[in-house]
Image 1 (cartoon, one colour):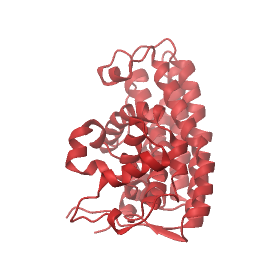
Image 2 (cartoon, helix red, strand yellow):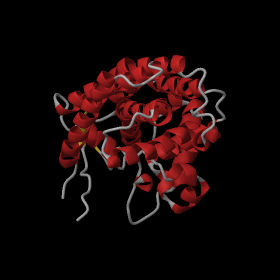
Image 3 (cartoon, helix red, strand yellow):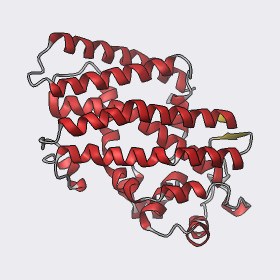
Length: 309
């Protein structure tokens, strides 16, 4: 029987702690790694010449990492405002799957943050191996397939995140009316235009990219008309927070922190591979294999804990 993810209930103080943890992870792991990758790939064209990246119209490989750095720093800058919004407008506890649009935006923004802080470092490690060092990997094939899928997602959301007004999205939290007509029910359609009309006319979110970001956050691309209209974004929807938050909360003090540390070490080693022109250092390869095998085992433990029958 296929397993499914259970709903999660988060206390207000847990949400605030998660925001701080996401911010710290982005600042201490992702930003330094991207800064190094920008320097090391300025003369490379392996990504530029790969069809998977053509939609980004890269001038050089370093351009991808510059744009990604800009996006994650932009996201990180709104996290203090998100904390204030949570403190002032979010009840003592909220549950994933909530009908409250304000709460759903908070959870979806958290999910986005977990994607950046938890998945993107591994994604970058895999990219370095695939496009630059090509030294092979000990990662489980299922993990590498998952990372390839997430790379497609990253390529698609970079332009959206570059142009979306994240400040206005955060400012909307607490200002969205909660009425019966806005409830999400599996047996009926959400009146998308009612909600989006409020964002347009009251919050002032009128540009396409910010509206697209909000719709993705709220899961409105699950509906047929929206799916057809934005199919390229819909198929990689990450606004539903259950998956990311469930993984993020497996064990806040041990298992998760061990994985974060190992992901950071692996990414640092992969960047060293780029710097090593020969990429034949046996010690370096041995260290990479060590951390990849550790992450394979951690991934299996996390999946067992993150799912229920």
